[in-house]
Figure 1 (cartoon, rainbow, N blue to C red):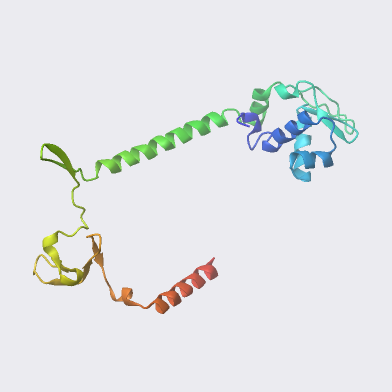
Figure 2 (tube, rainbow, N blue to C red):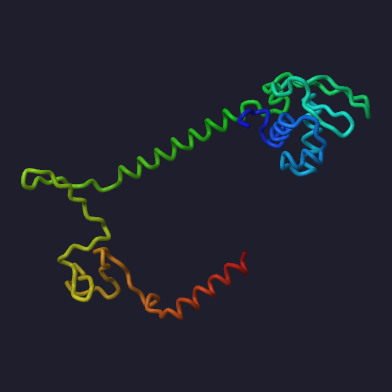
Length: 214
């Protein structure tokens, strides 16, 4: 499947499945191939035509089979009894990919994915450089790692009774700010004072708007 001959715009993945099905069970009709390959009837017809154009499959009446050396990507020249057309036989999977213009697709895709992974790792490294470095102190002869405070963490001197936050400029409790149970700063507004029923109604209304827009 990784070969460029079975790329989307070449033989396609269905061709590989049908080739495998004919390899395991030679001499099958289209109806039988639909069952053994789990490929739809229309796709089976199209794929068999594509494989026959490369001389990779042949049929006698309604029975299809692989051409000699088809598993190596080498077809045989077979005349079409209906119109006298002679299909150009395949000369290997590389040649099939070249004929369909898909040669090198897998290599380009692999290079693209490698570049994307490298760019992602570079972005992670840049984010890591901006993280606060921990402070190392020595206590009782051993090193202790003390993480640097986050910007949203409130120093204990600014804690006020009732979970409130003292404004450093005025020394009085800030109106809308509270200290969360983990010691970080949270903003409390009038919208956060709604009851459960009000929140449930707002959620239902938002979901209805989203579904109607979708």
